[in-house]
Length: 160
Picture 1 (cartoon, rainbow, N blue to C red):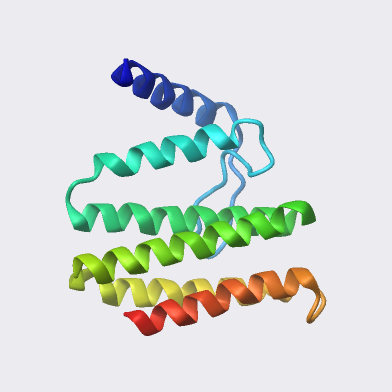
Picture 2: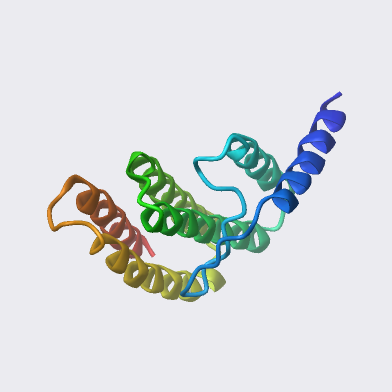
């Protein structure tokens, strides 16, 4: 029964990805195929949570977590570009969560080979976040939400 349910989610996720257009992003971010405001977004998130269990090798699992961070970054950029202000808080929370998960995983599993690339990724993402933050008036609530993600990245850089 569990396998059948898993296959259903994976197949339906593939179909849903194909049905929605991609939103091209700059800065080497992946395209957003299912937007956070989409009806199918919870299904996408569920399939991501299921997929993480299929990665056994610590290096490949860390790579998957890195991909999830980039997906969350692309979603935040999408939300900021479309001015979906009601989605900004949740999008920033998801990025902060994924950054913490990846940092704790790499530090806990002692995947030292991933630390240099992770540091570079975090620094590149900070630049993107600073541009996104500046789309909002200084010290506004939305500006502060994006700044919180930047602060989270700084804190997690110290852990590495």
